[in-house]
Amino acid sequence: MIENWRDAFVDLSYLVASVLFIFGLKRLSSPATARQGNRLAMIGMAVAVVATFFAREIESNNIVLIVIGIAIGAAIGYVPARRVKMTAMPQMVAIFNGMGGATAALVSVAEFSHKTDVPGGEALSIILGVIIGSISLTGSVIAFLKLQELMSGRPVTFPNQKAINAALFAAIALLGLLALVLYQDQLTLARSLVILMFLASLVLGALLVVPIGGADMPVVIALLNSATGLAAALTGFVLNNQALVVAGALVGASGTLLTLLMARAMNRKVTNVIFGAFGAGPAAGAAAGGAAEAKPIREISVEDAAVPLAYAQRVIIVPGYGLAVAQAQHSVRELADILSQRGVDVRYAIHPVAGRMPGHMNVLLAEANVPYDELYEMDDINDDFGKTDVALVIGANDVTNPAARTDTSSPIYGMPILNVDQAANVIVLKRSMKSGFAGIENELFHHPKTTMLFGDAKVSLGKLIGAVKAA
Image (cartoon, rainbow, N blue to C red; front, side, top):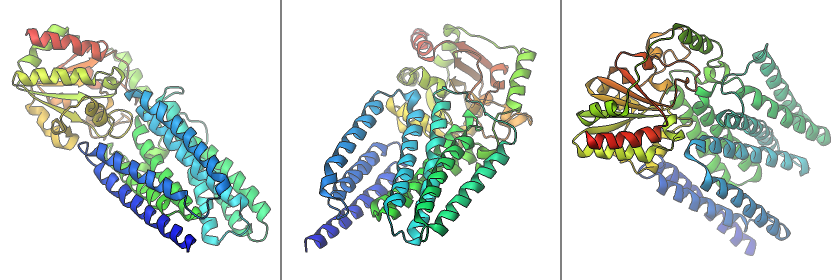
């Protein structure tokens, strides 16, 4: 009777948690409701965790260890989440995602190692969980190192790289197949094969992400997030945990959709992102060619930049990673407010892959309480640049490069960009002429209508605010 009550309570709690996950994910679809969505998902996870303590599989002598593990994990997660700068948010997402993959892989290995009777379907879930979780782990670590600039953001390639990756993948598949065939009659050997498969998958995860350039990191992060969700769902099948299955399936599905949307925003196929070594060759050539030609630029003073802004009718602000680096989101909001008070129509143009992760600019501007109705996606605002007096570009690089439309030799050729060059005047706030994450020169900087205001974005915006007030 007691056991039946516990089972019913756990099942009902997992159902409630699953519903909260679904509604939380739905609320995350809009910046206006994203915080509420996060809270719903947090409550759902809390319900699922508490319910797990009542599951009959949990032995009483392990509860203390579980509580200690939760406390340590919560502390490790809370401290960096509170201290992380907005510029480092993509790195944190990548490394946390990697930890999810590690958990799924290690739990799958542990389940296969201690069980003596593993049903065929469960064994398959374990094999797939180990492979996908391990690839997600090391792939996320490499993404973290690239985003943190602890290793080069450029593609890292070596001879026969694709052939080696293909051979390693084939070896992993063979190890998994052998483990499935042998686990009933030769369980010890099958367990050894799973360990080898785990190690090989770790290597493959690193090799898959190393040749991907930094400009593709938003797509990579979304794809690895999807992989982690799938690994978590498979682990849920192994543990017979419905809440984990639902949560993993939601993450996997949403991550897959986001990956496709990011790839479409760059006009590229996901397979090309993974296997194309974006920026490996042509980027270097483009950069070198730009340096050789020494194309002219027009530098402008703060006072000269303030005049067209102060007397414009329409201004579109284009934020990029440089805005996040300078932590200038509050300054740009103040400038926009001052311009609005002068009767200027101010809007923000958000490119889908601006920054270093999906939604980076939306989160950044939301932190400064920029009104949601002033944020416009690329497709909704691109046609308006031709009717705009001033386009103010703050730290955006590759997503404003006209070479994507005209230069067939450019590695970003064909990628949809913001039509900044169609505005009457373009003012670019930038620290230096350094190339963007794709490693190529931005043709916009040499456009006849473009002027450059060099310096830290926060400092430059502070001076612009004063100059606009005085104009």
